[in-house]
Amino acid sequence: MEMTHVLGIRENLRPFLQQLLQVFFVGLTIGLQRTVIPALAESEFGVAAGSMSALFAFVVSFGVVKGAMNFVSGRISERVGRRRVLIWGWIAALPIPVLILWAPSWGWIVAANILLGVNQGFCWSMTVTAKMDIVRAEQRGLATGFNEFAGYGGVALAGLVTGYLASFFDPRTSLFLFGLAVIVIALAAAHLAFTETLPFARAEAARHRSGQATGPRPRYAAAPEAPSAGQVFALVTWRSRTFQALAQAGCVEKFVDALMWALVPVFLISRGATLIEIGWVTGIYGFVWGGSQLWTGPLSDRVGRKGPSVAGFFLCAGGVAAFPLFDSLAAWGVAAAVTGVGMALLYPTLIAAMSDIAHPSWRGSALGVYRFWRDLGYAVGALAMGLIADASGALEAGFWFTALAMAGSGLWLWLAMEETHPRLNPAPETEPTHA
Image (tube, rainbow, N blue to C red):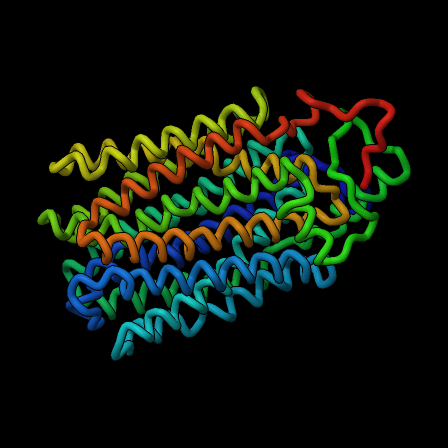
């Protein structure tokens, strides 16, 4: 296998499973901050009562850093390999549990989330890129679906478990022990059991250059054979209409996750919910989002990337808009589930679409740029929601803003995106299939 670098999930099952294990640990690491920390921001960490801008600062710091690290890690991984970048990401995470345990103020939580951004930008990016290295074009939706299922299943599980632990034991000690155990085990697994996949990408690029590639002809975006970081950034951000549509869609969809992370726990606390109830509502969102990607990813391999993506945006808009209209745990759970299905339709599909039209020789960089814009959406959305909530004095305003943003982004995607699946929209025979 290593000599010929044959593509396919079955042919590369061991590295595929190694990558799933890693992204599950990455999800657990971000999930440990999802339920307890926002809900206890005032009582435990000294955030001024009612200051949504201050509360959202920890999501803003995470989004800015993770976005930048996605771009950096994608570029670096094409030189030093995916495994080394993954290990660096776990080393960066080691101080996070200690910062949470000893935090005298909210500023320490913001600092912990800066390190979390480095960890996520390096580690989650590498699990996605490594999968795209080893699977065939017609398996990209399935592969990203499995990847994001494992990751967001971890997010949901950690949010639920830490909600229970913090209700029965000391919140800080619970988060410290849970986080430290996850990070140490993940770092050990990255050292001992993670296959380097960069040679697969280089072999695939060589096959395309020599005309030996088989199967549908991808519509790779036009670019130099070895584009610079600036050239890839420009291509994904504005030079290619489809890349641009995908990048803006990635940015706006993170508004939903920022809302579920920081605003929903505070909103539910204001409506009288307990920590365990908050853990269940955010957990339902995470579990439905994660689990549904097991069918939405393969769906996009069959019907294309555009339809599921656009449908997901409008479904999310409806689910988010419904939240403030309800006043019961069951109804909030339904709204969270609808939002989770919407995210599942669009999330792995956008990654697969990016991979469809990015040449193997610079695919890691292109995914890094896409993930830069996508995770910058955490910061943009959180900042906007915090300012809107503070200005209006109503938590509900953040929900309306997010719903409108998702509907508008879905419309942009529908109007500007070209179908990227190579089987459904192959490049003409007269076009070169390599960059």
